[in-house]
Structure formats: structure tokens, C-alpha cells
Length: 370
Image (cartoon, rainbow, N blue to C red; front, top):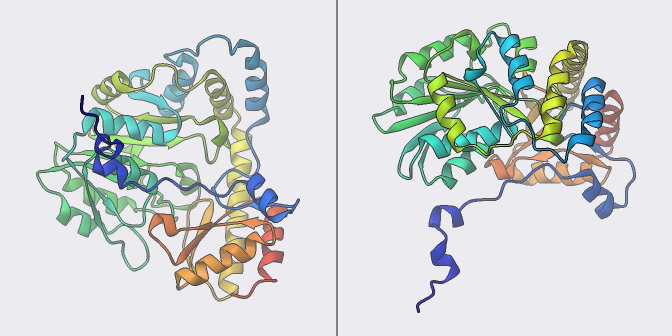
């Protein structure tokens, strides 16, 4: 009997993948640096935390975790359907929006298919696409770090099966305008699915008048992805949602895991949607502190990318300077995100924190040499 080596058992496109690098955990920095005060400004989380009503509902639900979750997530889908004027048949749920993205790859793509997106966009999509064995085609961004829709249109061809747009974009914080989105959609053929990843939708809607909320369009070939991980402060329980034509949802449901999101995620998300004042506080505080952060960075002579999210990305000029700022701030207990894993070696990304966390950041910045 001939046994293949382990390398022969794993496709080349899997072996060549780079593992996703998350923001450095607080506990890890405490262990490494021996510090007690840590401010994590690396993962674009909601510094205010989740709605107290969501916490209360999840706490009460702990007594029922010996039961399987509602596979159809009736309460959460009903809440989303009412909020966005949809039928429940237009909604899919998953473990974060990335979970749904993975189901899109599984349901609609085969090795050899072509997907189109931009450079400097969400690394999670790159990993999922390459992991599916498809051909990943990218275009350069504009000089001001935005999607170049004209360049993307030129790359669309008969083999293009999926177009991915993160709007607003992570990790640049920029967005595709309504006019640009309309232009792109004029050239998208019927055989092509467009994924609009609106993880930062709530922030952009608050700050950008010409932001194209994809739910205002209702294209049959567009899948909108959103999440409870950012503005709603539920990153730790992993719950995302998608809107699409019933045909897409039906086929995505065939390949998704049956009991997700979990029970706690479902009840927590419902209460998060109902607590509108908490969301409004989040957006108001973020808008104020984002402006303050941007002005501070520019005052230090740093080149920032205009953002409509809850983070600012900075062009440090070189990978050496980017890494040095990351390490220097880490020594002061402040975690930011170097973007080398995003193939943006000279950039760092700084999330908006609480007022106290931002003061910690400013104090640390005054003690480092840029």
C-alpha cells in the first residue's frame, strides 16, 4: 500500500495561504510587557461595549444552552426583516459576515473561477478566495486610497464570477460613492455576483452624504453583508447577516452550518437592534473621537487616509517606520495594527477607543519618536 506524503494531500493553493493575523490580544501584551494598563486600538471594536439589554438577554439565555439554537433564527430574522422592510427569505445569518462570505465561496465558486476586487481591501476575502482555489484578480487603488471603479470595470470579463467591494473599505476607511457604485453596476454582467461588504455601514451612513446604502438598490445579483461585530459591539459572539434575492439565500442555506448563529448570539443581536439609544451613543462618540484622532495625527505631521469608519489608517512612509511605531506604542501599553499582513507594509491602522483609551494613546505618542 502506497501512502502519499502529507504535502501531496494538501492542494498548493491551501499550502500557499497566509494565516489571518488578528490584532494583538490584551492578555498577550500583559504577559509579554508586564504592563497592567493596556489600550487596544487594533481591531475596530466598539469601545463602549454591547447594549446592556443584550448582555441581560444573553445572561438569562445561559440557562438554556443545553438546547440547540433555533436553526431558523426566527426572532432575529423577524427583527431584521422589519427593520429593513424585507422578507425573512431574503436574509441569511452566520458566524460574522466572513462566515457568510465562506458560504458564498462554497455555493457559487469552483476552482478556476475568477473573482475581482481591489488591492488594499479586506484580507479575509483574499484568504477565502485563495482557499477556494479561484483566480483572484485585483486592481490598484486610486492615489487617495479608494476603489478605482474605472480600472475594475476594465477587468470584468466573461470569466468574472464574483466582484467584492468592501464599502466602507477595511483597512483604508475610504468608501465608494453613490455615483461610483452606479457606474460600476452599469458594467456588471448578469452572470456575475457582487458582494457588498458593509461591515461599517452604520458609521458611513452617519458621516457620508453620498454613501450608497446597497439596500436602496435591491439588485438581484447583489449580496449585502453586515455585522453585529462593529457598531453593535458584539464581536465576541460572532453574528453577521446578509441580504439577497431569495434564490441566492435558498442556495446559501444549503451549504451553511445548521445551528448558527448560536443561541446567545441570536438573543443578543435582537436586543442590540432594539436598543437604538446605545447605537446612537456609539455613532456620536465615534464621530467626535475620530475627528479628534485625525486632527492629532495630522498635527504630528502624519499622512492620514480620510475615514468614515471607526479607525484611521496612517501612511508611515516605510515598513521600518510602521513597525517601529507599533513596537514603541506597545511598550507603553497601546496596541495598534501594523498592516504588513494586508500587504500594506508602510501603513498602520488605529481604532477609535474610549476617551480614556485615546488619552492613553496621545500620552504614549508624545513619548515616542516618529
